Length: 320
Image 1 (cartoon, helix red, strand yellow):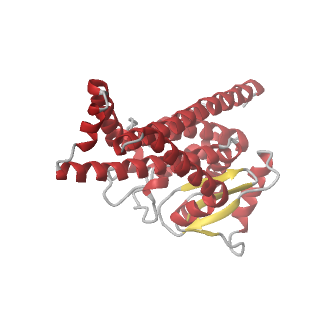
Image 2: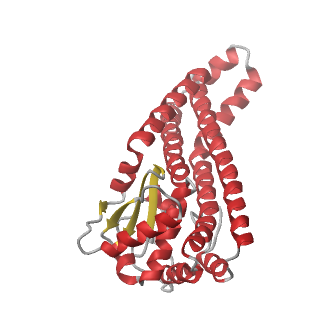
């Protein structure tokens, strides 16, 4: 890969960071929209904003103190012992050095026979990568190095902070929306429209009714829109991490080969956690997955995809 290709890739990194932070700003704004809608339905939009801000602050404190630990625990990841796996640590250290990291990420293992990996943390100095046992056993050294380079690219690009923050924000929105959905359900069961009558009695009239209707729509659709935005962030990151990983190893075909093996993997990922599936190099297969016997290669990208089509990713790598 020549110097011009590298410069183009670094420009793409900067562009991706700007776009992704914009998405996260919109995500945070959406939290307050949901909070206001929740407060309005309970009688005070201002109170709803304050509650949303409080919950968001608590979640971010958790993110910056325990985020990495919680995500690793949610995915049953254990720190990898150095006894029989020194070569994995050697690969991580060499790729980290190529990426300019002052300290390599911690390495964790997930005792699962499927092929997958993810990175987490809030900054490069406090990061971790997790590999499944199946990935370690079934990939050759160069392919494993390619996957490690992909994950370290997420680390150095601060994708790990962005994706972890997105998970937390989806949690806030789902929490607020879930509470209000239950509140709306029980209110409708009681036939109570007291708040609506009070709002109209205060002179709100039709505008108050429209705000009430809009609040209900926001509450019902908020979790769906939050997930779509979360998935959009994830899809943008994967292409970039593939390309950066290829730059770090100078071997794009190795990562392409790893993705090809992952795409053909039909092993159910028993340790997968739905809340964190966007972190993985490829969406984990679940028991109820409709993926064919050929694996993930027939999956198509849409609004609800956590990852771009794996065949497209392979083609891009092979063309480098």
